Amino acid sequence: MPKYQTTRIVNYAQNEIFDVMMNIAKYPDILLFIKKIDIKKQTETMISATVFVGIGPLAFSYDCEIIGKPYDMIEITASKGIFNHLYAKWSFKAVSENSTEVTCLLDAEFSSKAMELAGGKMFASQFQQAIKTFERYLRNSRRTKGI
Image (cartoon, helix red, strand yellow):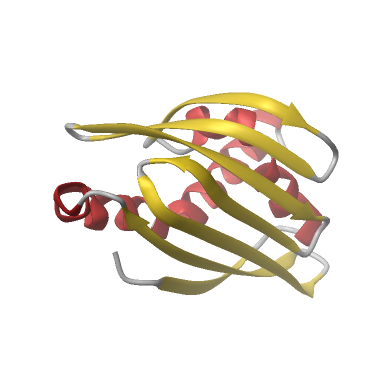
């Protein structure tokens, strides 16, 4: 899977977008390809979890560690599972009081060539849509709250 990086400006405050993206317990409700999250350990800035992914006919899981530096960065590293390596980094930079530049980097490789061929592009595609998906979630949350 090739490295992927994208930047997008979202109309949410830096702390708001960071907080929703750091709340991985909500991921199965936000990101359709995340089927389940088992949180093993959690502090204010670190989460250790097993992530269960399902994309079409593909299903797999991996253990990861998520480190958050409020409200600037989130790093995700796979420690065990289906990847030779997985590193993702989300960076947050305030553009204004209610706008944030979000940059996402994904560098991952499945341990199996067959899985890389079958799932690499699908996994990368889902990841690429994540910023828009988090935006939609925040927009819908505001509507529900009447904001």
